[in-house]
Image 1: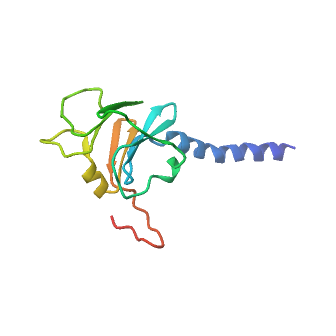
Image 2: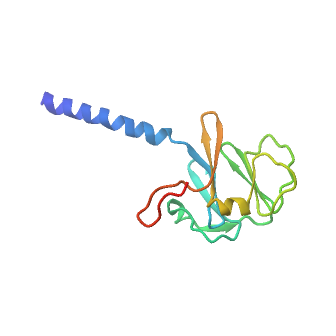
Image 3: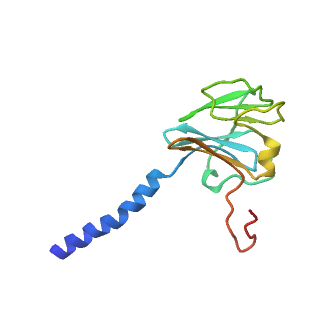
Length: 154
């Protein structure tokens, strides 16, 4: 009987790192996929899919069950756990401390911090913003993984 209890305790210890890694992973705030759809974290683990640009790529499989919606009149804004994300036709580069990043369909004039344009994102196969311990991490480009039919290019 003691051996059965000890085995269960060791099994729990082996399971603990997996639980930690699952809960400690960075939370996706926004993903702009090569399909043109924007996936926005609306808080409490909920994601919203927004049809925003016309792309040729695929949406992530993990969000394939989400119904797509239009954001209505552009510009529109979405609140995420880390701040606001505006979707616009043309970014105006105004300083707003509550904005995490701005997604624009058309090129912007001048340098705008954390503003991303559809032509650049489409060429890079997407954009993902994660909430991290020290702020927001933004990755432009798809995660490169070797596949039997397509070797990793980056």
